[in-house]
Length: 159
Image (cartoon, rainbow, N blue to C red; front, top):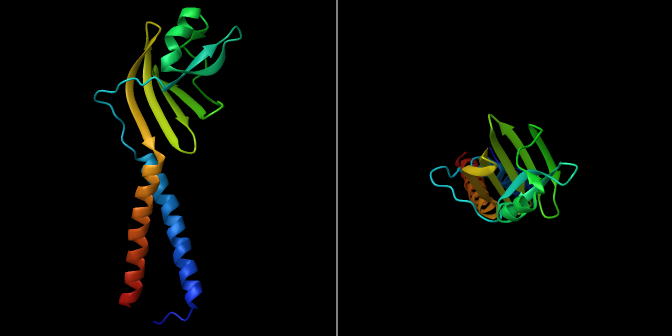
């Protein structure tokens, strides 16, 4: 069967399929990014959730600032709510607590870092880390989309 569409219509359709495939495969790579569970290590920029100030409102604090804030007595690591989210100046912080394990996700347009930790003796103990490199996931998504589009076009040529 011959394709009677104009050349530009065929190019436009191919580019739209490619764009959709890049988006879908990038999201798939982000959701399937592996967790580091064997020997996770704290980095100073990992974001934790805490209750801050006199009003005990939810706030984010980096692991590197934790000791200083604890010394001043400004924070508590035990959250009263099981889940929540709020916006910080440079990222979005979302957390949930399930069976005493906190999962905190800090994300922005160019990164997504998720950590799982327990609070033992008023100190966080790291369980697992998922540090997604969104640029790398996008690159992998473009490669997967390229294979898809090439495969679709080769299949069309086979007819």
